[in-house]
Structure formats: structure tokens, C-alpha cells
Image (tube, rainbow, N blue to C red; front, side):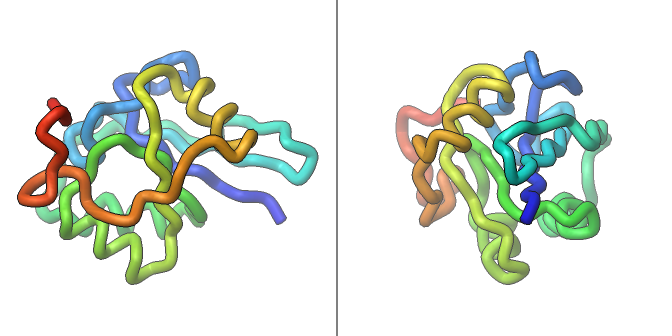
Amino acid sequence: MNKIIGIPSDGPETSDDISAHFGHCNYFVGIEIYDDGKYEKTFALPNNGHSGCMEPVINMKQRNVTDMILTGIGMRPFMGFQQININLFQGIQGSIEKNIQMFLEGNLRSLTNASCGSNSNPAHTH
């Protein structure tokens, strides 16, 4: 079964960097991963702002995203992804391509808590 990975990013291309924070990204990029391990970009949506924390979560669900790779996320969208069964993975600074490769190799850990707001890591910056 193919997976669709959502990634908040600084730009619309797979060579662009992953964004430091889910809700403050410039784009949401979708990458479809095929059974043979190959992948392709399926969407790049500009983040024109949103009226609530759940809007981008619902947007990802409507695009059949199965997993998200991100570096920072607040509690409300974190809980939203859990409620709609989209798996979250802790990304690393660098390109979307680098994060997808690490995902394919099994080198990204599951994100088990929000990483911004009251639960933020003091080293986390925006």
C-alpha cells in the first residue's frame, strides 16, 4: 500500500528545507511513497494562514495523508493528527529529500508529544 507523507516546508520543491514549525510553514508538500520505495511529489499547497489549528490538519486528511514528518508542532494540531490517525514523525533540519530518505530507512522516530508551546524543547526555535 502506498503512503502519502505530508511535510511542512519552506518552499514547494523536494530540495527545499523542512519548516521549523507546522503551522508557520510556507508550504505543505505531499510525497507519495510507492511499494518499491520510489517516491514523487503529489502536491505543494501554499500556507496562506489559517483560522484555526485544525484547518491544516483537516486539509492533510482530505489529501489522504497517512504520515507527517515535522520538526515542531503545537498541542492542538498534534492531538488533531492523533484523532484522525495520521502518524507523526520527528523530522530533522534539512531538505524534504533528506527527511524522506531517513523515513524510508526507518531512521525517524515517532513523535509522541507536541514540541512547541508549553511542552516545547528549550532548544527549539522558530
